[in-house]
Structures are given as structure tokens and as C-alpha cells.
Length: 287
View 1 (spheres, rainbow, N blue to C red):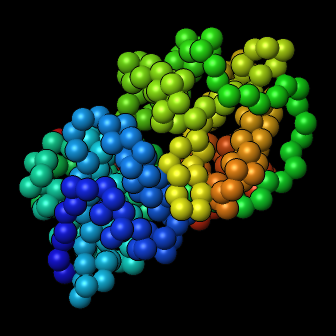
View 2 (tube, rainbow, N blue to C red; view 1 turned 90 degrees about the horizontal axis):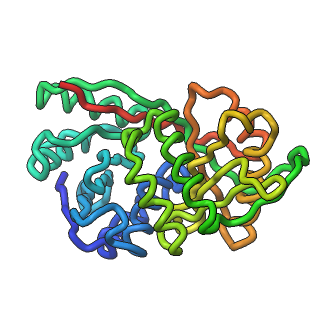
């Protein structure tokens, strides 16, 4: 097997995309990251992304990428045999100074065990997620209000919501208010993630975003409703309407990730029409 690095995202896409499209839903995150980098090379910061493929007798058998300072992302692969080739290359590029990795459950579990064996650095699973795919939106219960794109007057409220979401979801960037502000500013300027709110009597009550286009789909997230507006059907209505909008725009699929510890959201999304496709785990490295 041979590992090949790329510095040009377009060349990386040409090489990696056919492999990733074998399991488009499983790989919606790496496909979406590639799409985002093509549209805005500085979306994740000024440090160049790390992009590699592994070939076996000329055929690609693994894909991985990282947008520093974020986690290493491993794509779905048939088995774990490419991982011993990937990890030393990651170390040669970043040393052991990366926060963690994520990928399909069996792949990520094997990778962190090998990482610990090679570096002596431990790990902890910080999130167990499930990837879902939707092709058709099911009817959902009607609730008061309607969906609309965010606007400048929403800025301060949405920054708080994104900040609260990151903390509540235990995301690695939790507590980064500056990051929340930057993300909303980019959205308001027409760059990066698109955001929509469900509005009742001129008051936003729930938020959903979409980003990461794939050749046939797009990913929804985050989805957040403040505590005082929960259990009223707002998030369900918002995700259903946003999913339909994205399908109407020409996407064949919508994707999203759920936290497996949140039984409510997993049930709600399946009611809308989302079907589970694979489990994805996120690990943080700990000394």
C-alpha cells in the first residue's frame, strides 16, 4: 500500500471522490469538507488542510483529512489495514499535537487503539453519533410559526444559541464564543453555513443550519432549541421544512448526525423520514 498527500483540494477531490461516493451517506462529512474547502479555502482557518489517500495496487482503499485545528476525519473503508500507514504520516505532519479523531465506529475504534500503541497517548470517546439520510420528507404535526432565513437583527441571539449548543453537545469547540460569533457573521455575509429559524409571533424559537454539500446531498446541522421552547414541535417543524427546501433545490438526499444518547432527537428525525446509515464515534486524545 502507498500513501499519497495532496495540497490542492481539487486534485484531492478528483482522486478521493469516487471512493467516497461508494458510501455517500457514510462519508457525507469528508465529502462536505472537501466541498466547503473548494468554495472557501479559508473557511477553517489559514493553516492548509491535511488530505491523503491510500492506494493498494493502484486502487484507493482509504481517505483521511484534517482541517487544523480540528479533529482528524477518517472515511468509511472496507477494513482497518490502511490505518497503520495513515497514523505515522499524521504524526510526521503534526507530531502528536492533534486533539483527536472521528470516523465510522469500527474504523475510529481501531485507529485510537493504534494511536495509543504508537504514541503512548490515551483516548476517550466523547461522542457516539449516528449518521442519517433522508430522501423524502414525511408529514409532521403542524405547529404555530414558519421558517425563515436568519437576518442581521438575529445576530446576538444566534451567537448565544450556537455557543450554548456547543457546550450542551459537548463539542470540542464548546466555550468558544469568538468562534460562534465568526460562524454567524460568515453566515450573515453569505459565506459558509446557511442558517434558518422557526419564528413564532416574530420571535425565533428554534435554529437549524445546513452545510457540506456532497454531489447528491447536503448535511443539516446544528439544530438547537432553547430550553424554554422545547417539546413544542418547533425543531421538528424546522428540520422538516428545511429538509424539504433542500430537496426542492435539487438535492437527492439530506444528511444529519445525532447524538445516540439523545433518544428524543433520534426518534424525531426518523419520524421526519431520516433513516440510519452508520454509527460514527469521536475520540479525544488524553495524556
